[in-house]
Image (cartoon, rainbow, N blue to C red; front, side, top):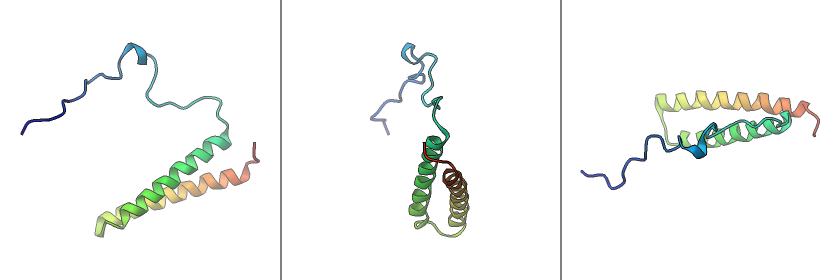
Length: 89
């Protein structure tokens, strides 16, 4: 069977335009409240995705996903509790 699409170049991000930069980064100067709000939203998205996927699993796979979901929910609970204790900016 022949491939329709060729493989991308191995070092496509290693160009002069991308020298000394990373694909993703954490910006300095972001306040704790804003950072925690973003983390909470990311964790909520992970929960929603896990709930959607979980309905299609059974047995051991469903149990594994439930444990991951539970950990994400606990992490989000900690973040949300920290947000509740911080005054608005």
